[in-house]
Image (tube, rainbow, N blue to C red):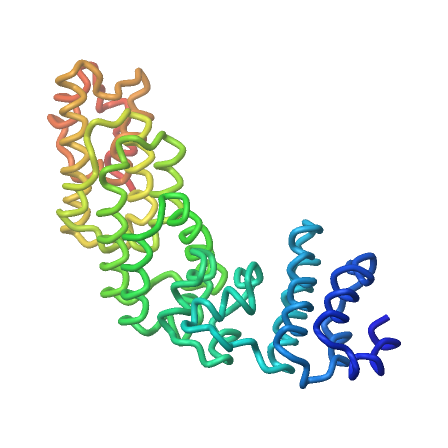
Length: 327
């Protein structure tokens, strides 16, 4: 064990550390604990330190279990705190992170890295979308409009769709877990506008389930900031099912919309359905009640009887009078 080896560590050079930590101790990797590394002298050379770091990195490569990788990261940070990090010959913070943390950077938090006096920009640039979302959800960060907007701009204009989805998957669940149902208007406005700007060219290529994910899971927290520009971005060349999933997203936050926003959503619905009608589709079903709920939701109260009749020739208002008069 490392404790038994402790007296010999005082005499070890880089080669001995390499031999022990990269060959002899490999079989005991699964039982690794951060506390074990405290027996290693603090004044070892950078080369000796790196021999140990290579061993810790191999945990990620040789064992896929998340708990082993997390333990390896804990050991790495423990080493960094107890021993002078290797910085000789490293010109940038990026090189420092890669040399001293490597694959373990995915487990770091902002506080972890800030403790090593790294620059804020480099720290945030090194974060994965999930780490960025976790960082933004810290109470003192989420309340800082400038930081949130700055980070979000960098994310949406530089990340792939998969990374943006990964970010939102973490970010939207944070406020829900914290029972936070609103954001400051400025943050909310910026996030919605930036997201729709990036999504815009891709929306017509998303299928029904993907649009449901965006408008009913990822975006509801921000949809109360919807304005006329938002509906200029949302395409009309989508299927009826896709349109209905988008409308349901707005329907779910109906009570949070202003009168003007309700009218905007209604006009979007009319515009889309009229386009479909002229193409001989109009998202028609024989069930009048279902047709109203699927295509208008609560926004049906903005419509006139003639609006419905112009879109569905066999519309029978007397059959659905109860849902036309009551919310």
